Amino acid sequence: MIADHDRKPLPRAFFHRPVLEVAPDLLGRILVRTTEDDPVELRLTEVEAYAGRLDPGSHAYRGRTERNAVMFGPPGHAYVYFTYGMWHCLNLVCDEEGTASGVLLRAGEVLTGREQARGRRPKARNDSELAKGPARLATALGIDRVLNGTDVCADDPGAPLRVLTGTPAPDHRIRTGPRTGVGGAGATQPWRYWIADDPSVSPYRAHQPRRRRAALDAGSSDV
DNA sequence: AGCCGGATGCGCT
DNA sequence: GCGCATCCGGCTG
Image (tube, rainbow, N blue to C red; front, side):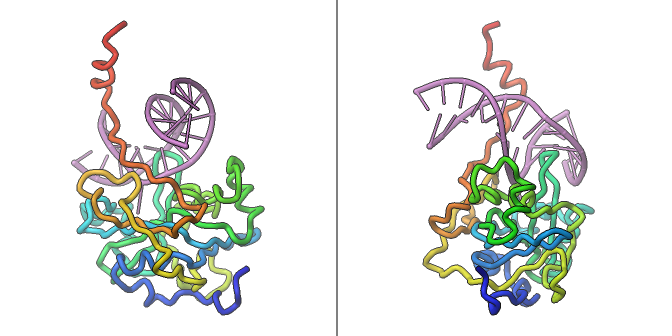
C-alpha cells in the first residue's frame, strides 16, 4: 500500500542536483507507469549513476549524439535506450541542462498492477523477478523508445511516467558497489546503489569481454 | 548455484 | 564491422 501523502510527484529540483546525490536518494521512491490499462507502480530498489562527459561508462562520454541527446537536456526527463537488439533500459536525467548525467533504474518491487506486469513478463518465476534487472524493469512497465524524453515530473496524474515521493530508503539500508556489466576505466567507481537484502535486487555480474573468433579458434586446436 | 553461448538491432569507429 | 549499462536456456558440478 502507498499512503496518499507519499504519492506527490518529486519536484524537478530533486533531479536538479549532482547525479551522485540523486542516485541513492531514488531508492524507495515510487515509479508509476500509466497506460490505457491498469497502472503499474513499483518501489525502486537498485540504481546506477552515470556521470556523462566525465564517465567512460556513460553513453554521453564521447559527447552529444542523436541517441543520447536527452541526457544533455533538462533534468527530470526519461532517457530510454534500446540495447542488445531486444531490450530497453530507463534512465532519469539529472544535474543541470547541458550536463549529461543520468541514473539507470535497475530493479524494483512491483507494488500495484501485478497482473499487467506479469502479462508483460510471462517468464518471471515469482514476483521478485518481475523487475529484477534494468531490461526486465522496462519490460514489466511497458517502456520503450516512445517514452524517450518524457517529463517524469509532470503534475498530471495521467502522465505516462512519473516518480512519486514514496518512502526514501534510510541511509543504513543502502549498499554501494561497482556497476554491473561496466568494464574499462568505468569499472572502478562504486556507483551502483541498492537496498540491502531486498529480493528484487539483481545479481552482480562483472563485465565480460567478448572473446574474438580468432581467440576461440586458437583455443580449440583439436579438430 | 554458477557459467556459457545465442538471440538480435543499431550506434558508433 | 564490433560491441553493447541484457536475458534466458541449457549445461555442469
